Amino acid sequence: MSLFLVGFRPFFVLAFVAAVVLPLAWVQIYTGRLALPEGALPPVMWHAHEMIFAFGWAVLGGFLLTASKNWVKIRGLHGRPLAVAVVFWLVERCAVLYSGALPGWLRWPLLAAFPLFVGGYVVYTLVRYRKQDSFRDNAFFVVALPLFLVAKALLLTPETLVTGWTLALGLFRVAFVVMFERTFPPFMKAAANVELPRLPPLDFAIKALMLAAAFHALLPPRAAAALLLATALALAVRFTRWRPLTGLAHFPVAVMYVGYLGLIAHLVLEALRLEGVALGLGAVATHTFAFLCLGVVVAAMMIRISQGHTGRPLRFAASDRVGIAVLGAGAFFRLAAPQLWPAHYLAWLTLAAAGWALCYALLGVRLVPFLFRARVDQKEH
Image (cartoon, rainbow, N blue to C red):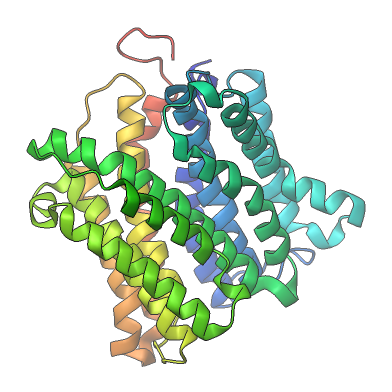
């Protein structure tokens, strides 16, 4: 079955569904129109967990299971083992809704099986075949992926909820900076015939700082803020060397530059929050990362992978561009509008969720059929 040939296929389908359903469900829960089952996680914990480990990890898991083939020349999970991973993802969705009714000995295995199975496989593959790895900095994934289980455990404990989600977001930031470093040069070469400079010492410093910054919730606020600002500064220095004006003139890479800037903005805002600066309504720093980095960059990545890895030419269709523009409008409604017109917060929250969901619905309608079909270039996978 074509759906289980490569990791990105089933997990991108699940990610599209999660991206549409979860934000809309959260608005209904937040406004009291929908109640979670009696045994479910508390609402805020459910929202944080599901955006990170349902949507985020469906994308991350699908990407890593696919990319590992290029990195170490070993095919990722496929066939029945991949189907088992999908079952674990689905079981986890049920477990978060009925965790309170589960016996203690069963709760954690059901909640941890998916990231443990997928993350464990990726780590094993990268370690086992490290001598043929094309990227030495995959060591950052070897370190970061097991730490997601620590983040999950902290997130699922009310007293450490904030520490858990900040660690999880920090680990996603590590994945993003690794991906940015690998993708910006070839994307710019293809889009604008521009050679971006390689800056190995700065590149390594950015990744090391970002990994350290994932633990900022464990540091004194002033030290944490300084670490976040240092990381943002290093990213900004490299941004100036990466021909941003040229990149922003080409839509397929412009979305990546927007995500890069969103990451910098997120780090600065989080540092300001730790310094006691009032940023306004709605966890502004967290949602800056969610919309401008996680939302926009993941959308562009799913467009590329869903076409490139099914043998199709890369193109951003009109519906893709509209979807990403709608997501940008959602970012305005989530980040700026509540500060300008706070009396209408619930309306802005609803519009932001609708923008996110509509973006991924438009992308999904076009791309999901590709994931169920064989490659068009006659390659097996």
